[in-house]
Image 1 (cartoon, rainbow, N blue to C red):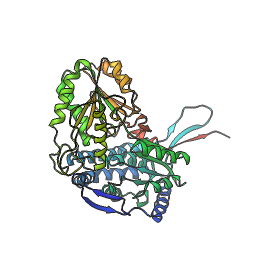
Image 2: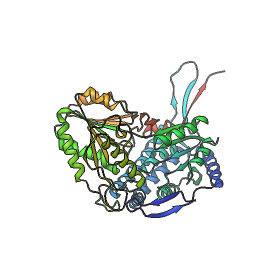
Image 3: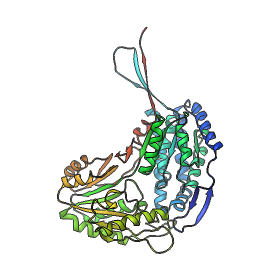
Length: 458
């Protein structure tokens, strides 16, 4: 049964299909990664670091191949795809550079014994359930720190990313990672649930929808397994003031339309103080209108298609729902004529709580703009969301912006930049945006046994 397939979202053409794992394959993945853990956990940290460093090198060497693969699979413009490959390489290299030091023993100054030492040790085989919107980056965030720790990995990628999934497995093995330390599986959701319940698996990390996160967390909870969940977002872009509105609008456009708006931490709600609202809104609508869609494999393309026709249909339904209930459509709002899952860059105003666009995540090139009278009103509106991933505040007054950013109920707050992702910065949210953190030292503090060894004289 071919549940995993490459369907070019720019044309709707089915390019290649892959068979789903059978029951024997499920058992093999569990047995191999458990056996691999018993060996990999005893490897020297410098050996693991060398594998990650070689992985980073191979990502750079094969950047064009990697980029074109995801452009074909999920529609990311190839120049953005190359940026994702570079970021993924940087993550592997960061853990290669810093991982051994992060694994050094920590001696505690606690009286009453000869010594008290905390060791960071791996815990076993882990399952990663990864999404299609950043096929390489999301996997790197999970795989790099955990392979550095000495854990092993069963990786289930999104069903529309089979070729990139196989490429990542191939590169890790080419870099010298043992075959049973990382196993890609084309598994069903039911098979993954069975794997989570298996005693050989010690944890699961999921990046994806709130619905998928709820299901995985429920299964993991029943089986007392650790989870890390990076889920949805309805991130704010708060404009308190601007001494260069053109530059602010340029940043807002990029923050909303990169990756065709298909990012959990993309700017989705633009909250603007009333003195600057008209100028910002008019310029943002004009900026959206200037962005043209094209073939994601073309180096000049800025806006690609959504990942699938169903994704485009869902976004249009959310937009139509808002307009039918009284929202103002400032620009866009339609599918782009022709083949492919293309949607016009869309901007809505006058959105109210009875509309889907108010509370649901808009996962595509569509944003909502709100007018507020004060910074405190901006914070209140921002925090009314059930999500709490990230948010940004824009102002020439850094003290005011810092104060507003500090009051946002989010895992990541930025001033005069949005959604910055670097290997050494923590990534994660609060509320219904998930639990846990990835990247930096925090990424090595999730699936780890912080083991105390205390020695006293007899």
